[in-house]
Image (cartoon, rainbow, N blue to C red; front, side, top):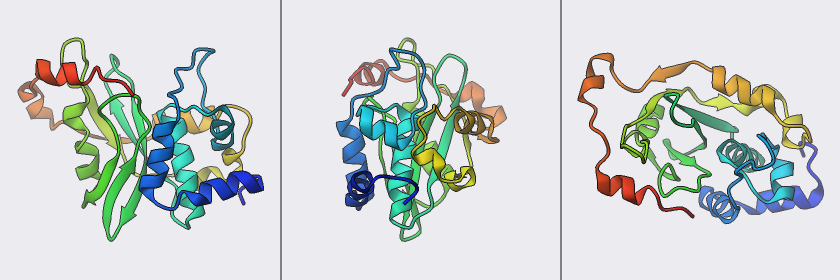
Length: 200
């Protein structure tokens, strides 16, 4: 299915729950793109055995798609001093959760307890800050993006998936901070900043 080899499909189908998908992503080293920027397909991630957040989200979405679910991802937009984050979305009994590939102690998996996309997205707000000075950087979040709109060949594509990355980057993002409240945002405490330096 989707052009996957039998062993690739069998492995992804063996990840039967969101927790199992997350555990697999956690087992992969983070892709620091030391040889240059990448946007690898799920097939390449399985072969290279590493992933950054978008690559992990697309692999998670593929595993969910093989379960008959929609391959949905969510983009979190930040200011120019930080890096955007992308997670895969899933739903259980009407509540949203997220699968996340990160090497940090924060911005991780979310249990399916959120009634809306805004609730889920905003659960990342207080954890999204610069370790250097504690400035909170999250500025917006997208609507769920269905990867089906890109067809299915991306699942096994050997070239970097830059058109998908660009589409996600350019997607409309709702504002995270009400305009009149920006001046009330408090920097992360030094203890939070210290905890955020932990790496997997």
